[in-house]
Image (cartoon, rainbow, N blue to C red; front, side):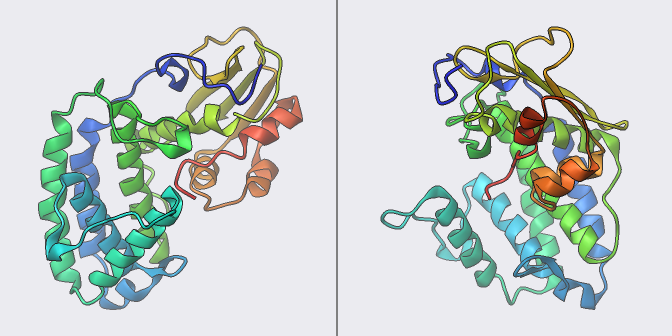
Amino acid sequence: MSPESDGVSGTSWLGDPIDARPLFRAELTALLATLRGLRPADWSRTAVPRWTVHDLAAHILGDYYGRLGHAPDGYRRVFSPGETLEAFIHRTNQEWVDLRAHDSPASLVDALELAGTRLAERFATADLNAPGLGVSWAGADPAPAWLDIAREFTEYWTHRQQIRHAVGSGTDPEPRALSMVLDTFMRALPHTLRRTTAPAGAQIAVMVEGSAGGSWTATATPDRWSLGEPLSGRPTASVLLDAETAWRLCTRGIEPATALDRARIRGDRRLAEAACEIVSVVH
């Protein structure tokens, strides 16, 4: 296999399409309930490095506005000369958070409810087969809309968990949303493995335990790694993770070494370690 090749036409290598559209309303409801249940002091707790709960709520609002094509206060996201995508995202995210720094929690929640409802309505009728925005961590640009929309869902879900963790609550175990998140995150496997050499037909299975879990098999084809090939017997390598470890690994809430310590691995350890380098966020 030539690990750098992008010769496969279409996007079958991303695996079967998934439909996150019906989940946005419930996710918004859960976010609003979480935020309305916070005590005043909780808004200043650290949710992610350099951002408080208030900052993260403002960031989610910025994501909503971005998808709706709505930029209040005249703010525009514009690339600087020579700026990489990652640098652009991090810079503009911080600019937006700074812009909303003095918003009251109540006003943020109200704005999130209004914008989030509009966005859920828009996604509900979106064409899953249309071209979507690029998903850099999956190596798809443009990505099919089903992946773009599912990626968007995972961002909102992940940020809600970060808020929950900041105030001492655990990850929401609701299985339907977590299952969608994990299924989306695993679409990063072919891109993760793009520089991992293996003979054509070699397979790496990543399995996640529990009601929200599943199994994803990346196959080395003559052109690239693919999630679109059937399992052909015992995989060359397999990695078994619990759901908490899996989603936190994909969002870099934990490092690959920690995930490997928790994992059950069979077969070729080199390939298993390569799979555990997965990142399903802009990092």
